[in-house]
Length: 245
Image (cartoon, rainbow, N blue to C red):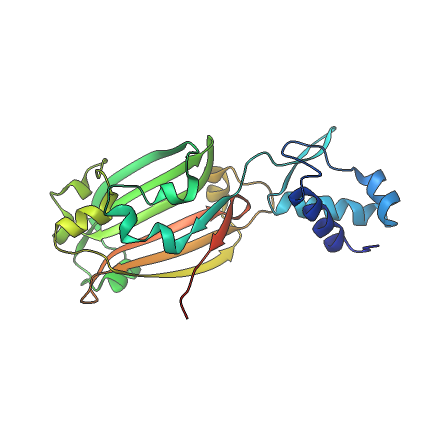
């Protein structure tokens, strides 16, 4: 029998994945875990807290711990950035969510001086400006991601990219129309704990980390044309990367 909180949590997660506990189902409480696994109450409590922290379950004080009803989003970086996606007018988001309702919120589009780290990433001088597109994304009415794109203002000023609605295919389709089609991408990823402001904006469960992804888009001649800083609720996402040999 498993004896640690981690082992019990992994066993409960496997039972959830197998369908024994469906979305919204109540998980065994501390007394049941103590009996079934032969552990102390503190260990049973720790196992349930791990599932809550990892976004698998939610705690309802006075009621119990329940399987989270929100289905995790599978973010397939390779498919979502494929030219076959945005060049045909589709949103790269549709790869992630399929038919699930996705809503952008708090969209802001403005021009400003390039932050130093953005200027370095885009190969701009310190006095050059950028177009900023900042927004949150809600899936099934739950906030799951914040994203901010930075693009050279000299290239994108007075184009549809500088408007709230970038049009079918989004900013990558517009960049292609400007002769600056992105053909190569790099992503730097790290996990960390969120700030209090980020916790509020994403309605993150206590103790849940965020995944920070910084993506840079390049043209065929190696010119960086966009930097996108994304912050994902780690409890709402699974990440997939596909590679050739």
